[in-house]
Length: 73
Image (cartoon, rainbow, N blue to C red; front, top):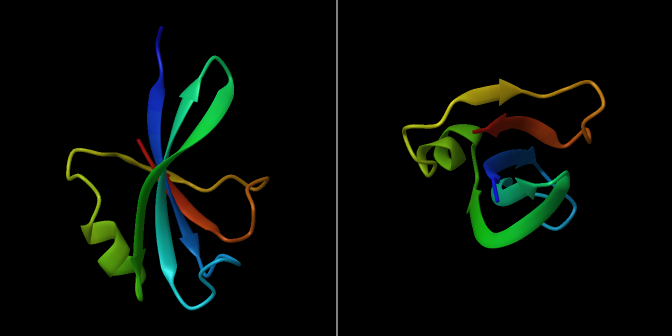
């Protein structure tokens, strides 16, 4: 069974309107499962600094929610 771990960075999501948030999820067989791993910081740079250094950034897609800044794989 193969899965892909994704960290998504949000700018001022509704549950943390004053912060940047990085959330870890898994994609498996086309389904997305959120994990409990969440980083909350005041700036984009701070939240990026919490991510593992071996990840690669993926730019947001036009169809993404407007709060999504980028994803990391």
